[in-house]
Each structure stands twice: as structure tokens, then as C-alpha cells.
Amino acid sequence: MDITDISSLSTRELLGSYAQILTELLRRGVVRSRNAPAGDLAEFLVASAYNGELAAPSEKGWDVNAAGRKLQVKCRVIDPTVKSSQQFSPFRSWGFDACVFVLLDSMTYEIIRALEIDISNVKSSSQPSPWVAGSRITVAQVLTHQSAKDVTDLVRAAYDSLH
Image (cartoon, rainbow, N blue to C red; front, side, top):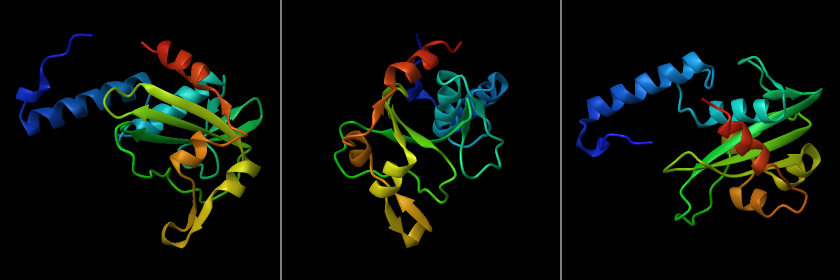
């Protein structure tokens, strides 16, 4: 894909382009809001990969229903060169069967890894965090979790099938 050198664009032009990109992603149904697209993209890809259906936007306990299995989706955009600890957004409820953790490259939005972990292992690995009124798990914990099922190829295939 050939993209114009964006370094010459003004901040206003960059933000305008970003808004146009989000509008097109909304039109295509890839994202469901004008927030940063990583979370919506991950949910869309997991729903597609698992042949599931997205939960209503107001659903708090899970994101995708795949053949009766409720999946929570957590996404993190990471810079592989940064070695500091990174955490996924907190779990504030446990109304799901498994969580699919998706890691996106910060420079390309390509999928680095996608791992599925069942709820019991997510619960036992996460740490309560009163500050966020939930429980948190780190990227390092997910990447090294012994029970993690690697679904990277499945989620990448869903990504590859997008127009």
C-alpha cells in the first residue's frame, strides 16, 4: 500500500484524515464508535474469527457470543521496543467463559499475538486493583500463561479477509 508521506501534514490535517478514516471504518462495520479503534477492531476480528456475534455496545460482561460461549476481548497496542510492564484494561465483571487477548503492533496495527485463556485462569492470574475498581493482568502474564491457547493464526485470517 502506498501512502502519502504524512510527516508533511499539519496536525489539523492529520486529525481530519484520522476522522475520515474512522468514519470509513464505521461505515464498513469494523468499529462501532469514534474512540481509538484498537478495541473495536479486536472485538470485530474475534467475532469474525470465531464465527460469533458481537454483544450489544452496552454489554458489560462479554464482547462476543461464539456458539454459546461468551468471550471477553482485551486488546493492547504495544511497541515491541518498549520493555516496561504493560497492562490490559481492567476486568470489572466475570460474566464470560474465556478471554481473547489481542496484541497489536503500535506502528502497523498488525496482530502480534492473540491468545485465549479460560475465565478460571484469568481470575487466578489477575490482581485486584482498587484504583480501577477491577482486576488487572499484564501483557507479560498473558504471553507466558501456560494455559493460553494460541489463536493468532485464526484472528490473523479474519484480519486478512477484511476489505
